[in-house]
Image 1 (cartoon, rainbow, N blue to C red):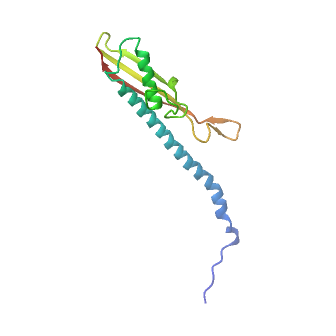
Image 2 (cartoon, one colour; image 1 turned 180 degrees about the horizontal axis):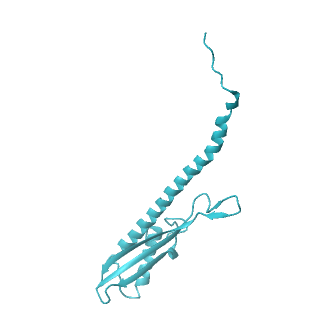
Image 3 (cartoon, rainbow, N blue to C red; image 1 turned 60 degrees about the vertical axis):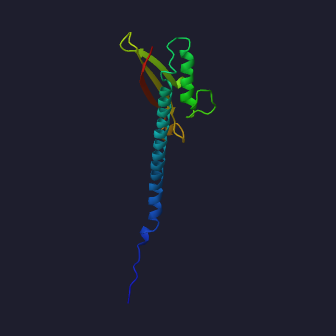
Length: 158
């Protein structure tokens, strides 16, 4: 004769309580991993765009005079922002505009035929699910932070 094994009645429903405690933490972890991946992807896109702008700034597009340089810088900024050197409507990143890009030049050593061109790009990254985290104690944690990239290119001038 076999006896059936009975569970104690105090264990009923414990799995639901455990799932209620663990599930929000697992979901938060999954969303955090997704947001981190999205941030890395946007940083990669911005770095590729700055690199493409630097490559476009080759010797054939370099103008050493002060009259054509602003037009060239404007084209480079548009190339970085929109992916082409004409104005576009869709930036490669939401909220990314020409004020996020700076272009500077240095001749090292002074009087040499080499110019070092530095292109800096800054982008304020924000998570999809909001830019602030409520701590439930009256304080909020700002989740947005700047992504920065810069590329220096050496160019020989005439």
